[in-house]
Image (cartoon, rainbow, N blue to C red):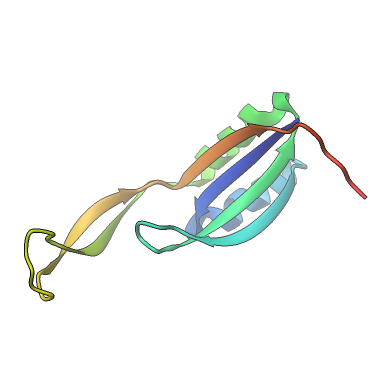
Length: 107
């Protein structure tokens, strides 16, 4: 048994969730916030058998996209509060962790 932790952009979350449910994965959806960009994310917890991991990864890659975002940043070498400037960064559509599950109990 494996636990997949899928952190996904809110823009892609509903499509990924629908596709996973259609394939009969058991999914728990949680709201989360990213640290670097402080942007809204969705975290999906998926418990599944090892032989279904690659199919779930394929679903996530099919429905999530890397994006460009403009963020305000400051120059750490300047002491002025007014020295912020915009930069464009690439934001991943999804990050996936796959963990071994030692024990599963359902009531």
